[in-house]
Image (cartoon, rainbow, N blue to C red; front, side, top):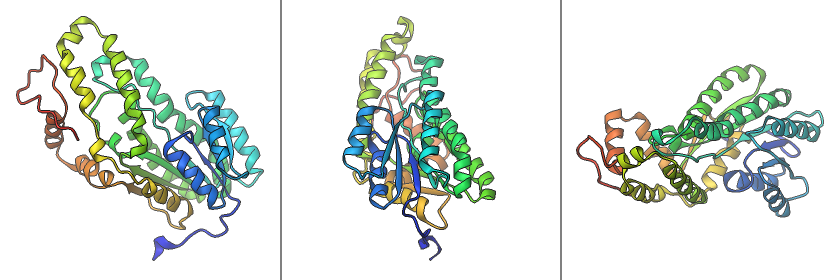
Length: 308
């Protein structure tokens, strides 16, 4: 079938991947390295770079990258340009999971939105723009990895904004770059076991936000709201097999006719996708019974906590 056709002569082609310290970016870098690609892995820490190099081939290169810093992005682009040596860049896989801080909107400051959007949206857009000349030269691929649960906004903060923004950016980029032979795909994935480490970070940020609230705001929510917010989780939706995401990203890179969108993980295919198409009144009702209600809530029927 048409989706089974593969690009030939993949050995030696360069692929640049962001967010390779841990998780999906790290796993994809190792996978493509074994497949014969010349992987350039961007890590946020030197420790992440060293650990990745220690379990990969000599052809895998790492570069430190802070997506919130334009100078760091510029240095990474120079490194990629030198490594590709005039051949162009065959693949760019953009991945950043800047989640915290998240919480009720009236707990947040504008700086809290910037801390997420500067990395997970504006940083990814900036590095994509600067690598486009190399991608056009190689008629390469852009694969943007987006967490599907971010496409259903149910908590305040920049997380869902960044995911919706990357969807829009990917759509316009796909239409425009097709004239130059560059293919753009989106991989929408669900919640995976490897991401549970973010839960602890989110809880710490939630307590930090709570401690910074005015007495009036704290009283309007109540301490019970804070405690029950920690119990709300998506662990029951968790998929333990990240190979589904890896296979989608691999297909987007090596297929002759990659798909516009991939969905990996059962919750991405059914739960979050269903909610995005469901009437707002239905999704609102689901979130009302799933998450705790503030102490001074004026809506009846709150307070039934369902741990999803």
